Image (cartoon, rainbow, N blue to C red):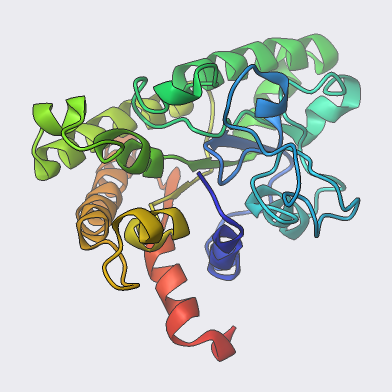
Length: 285
């Protein structure tokens, strides 16, 4: 689950986005780091609908964002010139011309794997987010025609942020979890990467052509993990090890995928390094 510290990655994410031509629409997939309110419309315990969430949002009220204020998609949306952030796909207000801005399919608690986040009960797992994307395209086609709908999707910016929960809310959720008994950590990371590759290929086959893929941040330094697993205030070394194994393999997989496709569809963002840069030299930002 996200904390307001997730916004620290934004400045360097903007640098990554600058390498991508301006998008006409924006689609968001993933977990609580980028959920803008879908979980408000679900019967789930993964919720951000009460204070102190939203205390720095323009309305001062919770919005379903797992943040004190704006979240990563809000600020990226502004950077690429959108008049407003794409609405959560489940929002009753998501209709008509709102479809042209894109859509947010993200859901707090989800992971790459379907069994990640089972404790949160009813969340939009990644396969469901992709199903909703197909449904969205049909709705958009009904509004502007199939040809124009395909153009909107192919020229859009896509952000996908998922993977952290597969560690903190699956492999390391409890001692001797089912996944930790099934896989050693290096094998689990390889398994996650192979499953993530399948998700990215599905996005590509669905028409996505400009996809920003974030790695995990420093998982062992998340406040909840510091409290549960930290040693004398230090970050959890085991979770730090997980992130250090996962992120380079994610980049390697993305490079291989682009090579197979024959173009740079997927752009990797090293959020762990970005976070560490902010912490080590905050004045530079």
